[in-house]
Length: 263
Image (cartoon, rainbow, N blue to C red; front, side, top):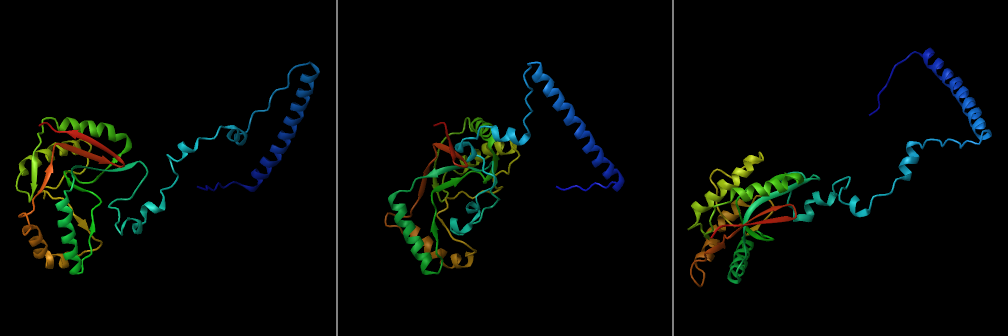
C-alpha cells in the first residue's frame, strides 16, 4: 500500500543537502580509519551484508516443501467442467478440509444390474444420470475442518462413539432407524464441540445412487413410479439394500479415519 506524506519544499531541499554533506563527511572518516587500520596491521572490518545480499545467500527450499504451500489455489480445482458440472458448496481454500462422517456401502452384483436398469429408464424419460463414484450413508453434513483440527476432531469423534453398537440397516429404511439416530447424536456432540453444523433435524437415511446437473425434479417425479417398480419387481423379490454398519468412517480431505463399533 502506498502512503503519501506532505512536507514543505524548503525542508525537503535542506534535508537532501544535509544528507549529501553528512554522507561525504562519513565517507571521508571511514576511508581514513581504514587506511590507519591497514598501516597498524589490523584486519579490515567487513562491510555488513545488505538485505538483498542476505536473501541471495540463503539456501533455497526443497521443491517438495514449496509444493506443500502453493501461493494460489489451482484454478482447475474451481473449474466445474472438470467435475461433471458440479460446483463446490463452499470455496476451496488452502488449509480447509471438507469432512463428513458416513457408513460405506459396497455394492453387490445384483445392485449394479438394478442400477443399470434405473439409469436406462430415467434416460428414456430425458433425465441423464451419472452414477456416484462411491456409495455411502451419511451421518453428518459436509463441514470444513482446519488442518490442525483433524487430530482432536477424530479423537473427540472416537470418544463420542464409545458404546455405540453395530447393526444391519435395510435401506427402505426398514430396520436400524433408532440406532442411526443414536449414532447421529454421538456425531453431533463432536460437531457441537467444534462449533460445526450438526445433522438435519429430521434425517432421511438413504444411499445416493446417481446425480445430474440442474433441477430435474419434475422429470424425475414423472418416472418415479416406473423406477420404483424396477426395485419392487426384482426377480428375487423386492430389492433390499443392506449395509454392514460395523465400522463408521470419517473422511477429511484425502484422509479416511475408521472407527470400529462394538458388536
